[in-house]
Structure formats: C-alpha cells, structure tokens
Length: 281
Image (cartoon, rainbow, N blue to C red; front, side, top):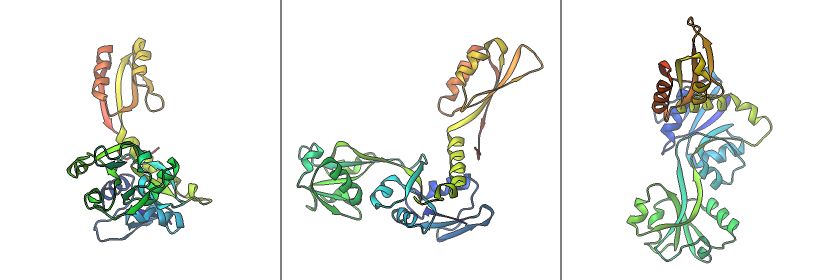
C-alpha cells in the first residue's frame, strides 16, 4: 500500500485535499482525522505538518507527499521533487530598512532572521556571503523592529506586511516556491508513485484545458487546426456533408473566448466548449 503525506493544515492543506479528491482518491471528512485508508486505490494518507513532510518522505517513513518547494529545500531531506502542482505560489526574498542594505553582498557580517535557516544558509553560501542566520518560528517581519536582526528573509506575497514594518525587499528572489509532489530517492520509488503522478497530471490538465468541438468547412481545416492544435493534435472526423468536417481539440481555458471568436470569423460553426473533469492521461 502506497503511503502518502498530506499537509494537515495551513495554506497548502485545502488545495491538496481538493486535488486528491479530483484525482479519485478518498480524503478525510473531519479535520481531526490523521490517517485515512483508501483500499480501493491501495493508498493510505497521513495528515502531517507541512514542514515535516519532506523529512518523513526522505527517511522512507512514507513514500510520497505534498509540501512546498521552500519547505523541501529548507529541510535538507533527500526527498526529490517530482512535479509542481500549480497552487500555493510564493516568492522568498530578503528585506531590510530602506537604504540600509540594497544588495545581497551587503548582508556580509549582518544578522539575518528567517523561519527557513537551511534555505537561507544555502543561498548565502552559494553567493559567498557570511552572515549570522537567526532562526525564528514566526513573525519574522518584526525581527528588525525588535533589534533581533538587520535583515530578514521570508515569504513575500503582496508586501503589505513588510511595508507596515517599514521594510522593503532587495536583490533577486531567493526562491519561487509552490506546492510540489515529492518522493523518496530510493530504488523503486519512481515506479511506486507513477500512478499518483499520472492522476495528478490529469487533474492539472483538466484544470488547464477545455475540450473544444466545432464544425469547419473542409477547405479551411488547415487554418482552423492551426488555431486549435490541441494538447497533442486535434481529431478531424468526416460529416455527412462532404464539404464539412468535425474537429475536436483540447485548448487552454485562458483565452478560449477569443479563440471561439476567431473560429467564427474563419467560418466554423456549432462550437461547443466542455470541461475535462477528472482527466486521465
């Protein structure tokens, strides 16, 4: 039975559970449930702290899990990223008082407060910068105000909290993070998680694409299919009227209305858009 770690709370939890549900897996009904067995899919889910998931996967306690890329890299675990899942995006950056520190090189010999010491130490080492990394479990934005640090390194979304503390970001982002599927780096792990990966890929495809069906004059099919090349290639089928063909293709959700207008202008008719729920690749 495949053992999969799922975030038990926080920003990644709800989206992870929803994705697993769309992929056809059983998920917990009560937030207090810590273990959920899914015998129909030969899977067992363990709801764990997001920060601990990479450690459990890397040690082989569980076979796979969903966590943030930032948490995976910060953990130092041997677990490997399999695929990005398209949610939980965030940017990890340095920040300080305006004018105090404007480049990463100027962090040398300064104090840097963060909840991700492993990630920050690795970044500073890569840049050849020596600094005193101060680990905090939360409220990193107040570290400079309280005199704990000269610089902070933290997740930045809108930047509102930083501005409230009189801080501004500087330098290039340390990392662009999002939710990722991870697995152990041991023989057989890739094969063991292949079905899970394929199902999650199907969910992402279903969220990204819609199925587009339309009728098109035969002499314009080359132009029409150039507009709708599909995820792989469109399906073109004959109709009772020899002058027309039916075309089916998967097209991106974003921009589909513009695409439909272009097809109408070209001469296509009977255009139908259908969701691809629970796509299986």
